[in-house]
Image 1: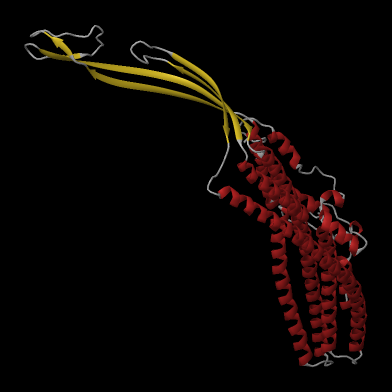
Image 2 (image 1 turned 180 degrees about the horizontal axis):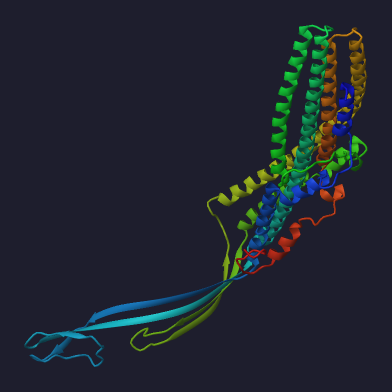
Length: 486
């Protein structure tokens, strides 16, 4: 096979969009695997589930608190009383408790009886407290928790887009580096063939030793390029494993997704500013900040609660009392007058936070607009680059064939042939890179608009639904196990 034939074979095998062979992975399949296996995405889902628990925590303000208290008390009491007795005769009180002792003095003198009592008093109490009014703090805390949950879901959408874009980039990087590795290996085969032909011509005296040295130098350079390409391919393969979550198999070329993006830049900007999940995070952040102002204002309102208590006591409560049961219901109203001024400072601070969150919203909208404009320009440049490099490859192939034929008749030198080979390798490398950039830029634009997701890509697989966990825990009254059984 001649030099031109080797490069034409490489053009078809390396760069052309092909049909997936059996057992090969497509870009769509890799995106699905990343969606299911990526640890960063799974971690963000856990963050959403964690945030869901803020809603039942806020709802607990509507529910009573019930506490059972059990106590066991042992009291030891010693009592010394004063009495009168005849000489040598002690007068003891009519009720003489167990363990009593008497101090007496011979003759006519007062007696001092000592009485020792031990009481063991077990008790069991039940107290229930129900908040009736707390300045609407509970209602506002529930709405704030729901806003935080919605913000967490939007952040999950951001993470999903980032992971899918990283997966598409990792896939295309591995595909590109595999193609460049194959291209450099084919280049070494071409240079080996060129060196063989040059040596044959040197033997018959058609070229000089300089031509042979030039061919040997280019071959060594080509082998060094293969080693560099192998290292880059290994790096891309490791990155693919990290992002996708599985080892790479045979990859097939992927097509861009321009059909899924708006046709006009103005439409893309409008959609991104309204629907991008980053904008959603900022909007829900404003809602949560506004509700925090109301929560802090609630500390200035009166508080009302209802307290009920049951108390049962057993044992010898006193000399004549063995049991006692009490029950009461109490309504409590607390009106704050002044608490040091901290509550007013918290209200002012929360209002400043609202202003900051509104600025953050405009910043997020401007950022997504800048990302859309940048991605749009990169995609246009990538399209033009593919067309230009296709023309370069076609021209360099014709030039290589011409230089090779001219070298056979002595009109070109070996260096001219080597230069033509290198130019073709360079243009082929640029074409493979441009095709890679074309696909990645299309996915980048779709992510910039905020619509890079599996349903948009037409991949109908079971999706993670954060509402499932939310509904499972929202109205839970008790229990320490999470829905998956842990």
